[in-house]
Length: 115
Length: 112
Image 1 (tube, each protein chain N blue to C red):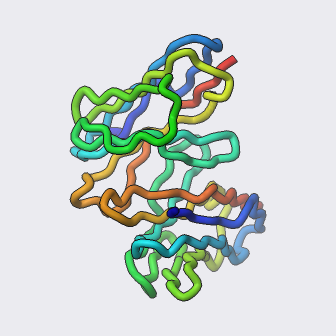
Image 2: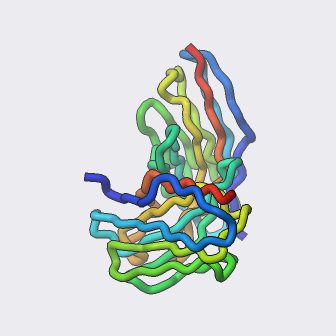
């Protein structure tokens, strides 16, 4: 059983389209994250949710909207896709803020290519 | 702010060579320090960690020592294998949320 699973793994789309990436974790963790990894492997946090509540929202364009229907799921919706959105998006989870050890569990990534 | 600086890659080594990947961190907030590894086509996974000064983290033959005096957490391995080829990320976490900040990653390529 995959601990943190993301779908789709690959996504190729045209500029201007709207797309979603889904993430689920079966670890019973309270906190979930979205990270963006660019072509040079630089990893930057975008959002973090703790028990379905948004706790971190870095300087991300408002075309990006996370949604957490329950604490096991954190989906990422992107409107009006741009070329610069091409990247690998990683979902991650951790135990929870009160007991956070700093260890994150990552999904395998979703490679988004905008043409 | 909180940041982590890693040496630029790629680091290219022959099998059984000694590995060092340098990492320095900003010292605010008594951080915990981590090394994560990303194998090709996979997500990051925790390799080792250290939570206070002079602690040594170790796993799979890799080691790193938390050096407060030099604000460093260099990753070392005595004899690398081809299967160690991956991207290695140094990270720090501190403060109330304890969410890691990652360095830029260092690619390691090991040739047979």
